[in-house]
Image (tube, rainbow over all chains, first blue to last red; front, top):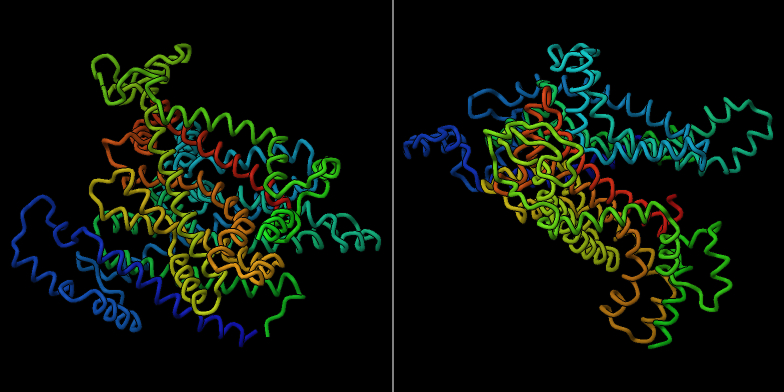
Length: 308
Length: 322
């Protein structure tokens, strides 16, 4: 287990370097001048622009800039944005908020998704199954931002159950609606995945054995079937973290949450390269680590899987 | 050479490149009755024809394609023509079928019905073109990686890993922000630039399975060259999972375009897009939900149709995933 994890960690290094280089190149090579953007419509003084560019190292070749960036990153320095605030500080404010939102969303996704999927899978081919299929198809078809506005319109504006804007992001009851909206799409996929594996595993040999041993139905389904069906679900949830971050940009915008999505959106719009690179670098790292964690989790779910 | 091609077509249904046809489907019985066994594609078509989901989505899609190609057949009102005096946020008249005021008017007094009709083209165009581009790039790279293995595979797979590591929506946002005027082709290029990786992965793994088949060895023994083996023998038998993934992804690309347009990073103003209209509508949703609901409904319906088609195609081509 330890050696496997170490090998995987080593394999991550080239991917990490490659992905950060890609985002760095995208931010720096593509047109769009952040220094000019500070001035807006005003015509800036060329000497001033040259000086700012020198200060931030924008006048050097891109690969050299990247090299410097990575060196600073090793020291834990993410650089600072054009207003002079350290990017690390901005991220320290935003990440806990999004972490809470995402964790709540993943919890909702797994509970409702697996629940719905199991319910449909145990009744494969019946009306309940078709109902869940149509429901999940509909949810998948409605884009997250539409869902967000409709949810806010119904539950916050019309019914007044929840505040339309999140004022206190440590309050989980306020975060519930945005987390629910964020979870919906993935929840539909989880439900479909669970339904398929449940329906398939119902015919497995170990199910017959468990039944023949006279185990109660609750134990057969709750332990034997559920544990065996969770592997694809866990894989999906793991690979979907990137999607959650994309969704967070939308949900945080709609419900006015000051998280990573909002930070990133504003940074992209103002061509704030250092913030974009910093946030994406951390996200890539998080995604890679979560994928490793998921692979290690397989061994827990299925004892036949062992890592030497 | 004819022997080889024949072997390939008859083998196609049983070779494990894609799961064998459904065991419990009525298709098997009738396949035994007819003299010639159906190919994988014949079997899939048989399966598709008997699915109501396939027909519902097909009818919807044909209708949407006609709307996208000839919006003038459905409305004669200019979608950019606003009349603030008479139509400012006019309410929908649900009885006035196909009239300009059917879905009401937006903040600038423009007919929402006309805008919904004229917005179809951009969405469909983005969805179809991105899917085509992604299938071409990803399919080709995946095929090369899977067939040649070795260092070719290592290089391509690492590039795939790197692009895959970047969250899709965030990456496209960064790319699109660099362009001030975002026409349809810019959005297509940005989505394709980051979207090809999953297709490449799927193609790679199915090519690895297909190239080990006996008919490939037979073709090579008969002296067929690499391009011939690749395009005549390996590709036809490895392409099914790719088609499945691509069809399902199409709806996702349409949704992504609308999301980007909604964020102000997708299509920009002279182009009519449901995403932009939804974004406009969201500002006045409290008193005028119709400004958001009609473009959103049309968008969801389109995505729904494509995803349902993808589902039906997947069930027909890959019964194991059902």
